[in-house]
Length: 179
Image 1 (cartoon, helix red, strand yellow):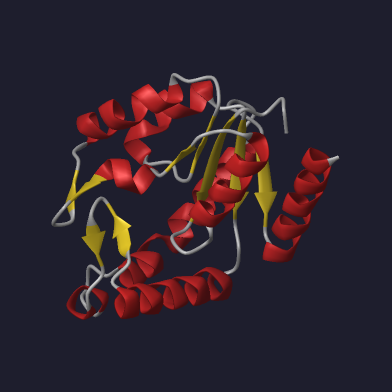
Image 2 (image 1 turned 90 degrees about the vertical axis):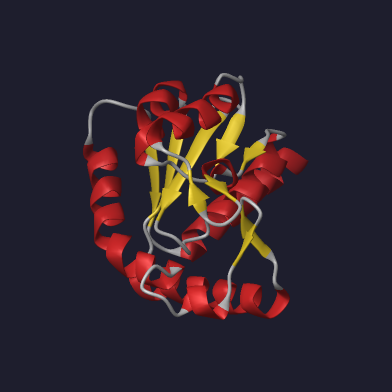
């Protein structure tokens, strides 16, 4: 892990990008950058593309970081500085199940989602809900991951299609770090 000090985790919403980033950052002693916190403002106001680049640029100038997402507008700034892309390319049933559990938890606890925002029942049941977004973006995210993994340019891609393989890999990193 020491040679990969600038890591981006990609995957559909609910795949576990943030959870993986927290663990990976702790293992490697690297800062975890919560990308959605950078991209959203209170009231679910999304930054425009130029502001997204401005928000992420200072973080990727550093020598070590783990980003828990990659927004389209930031690809040209982030990927040239990235040592490794970790792709969580799980089946829909896995990411959707995780997303539903997370959403229900946040609805019960009023835990912040990102950028000072919380999920509400009205937002969870709307056409713009995170669950609806999962359905709209799943195939596109899968295709993007396939393209990144197959492409000769860009950083190497470590692609996981099963959460058990991801967990086993993480445990091996934790054991190596503890040794």
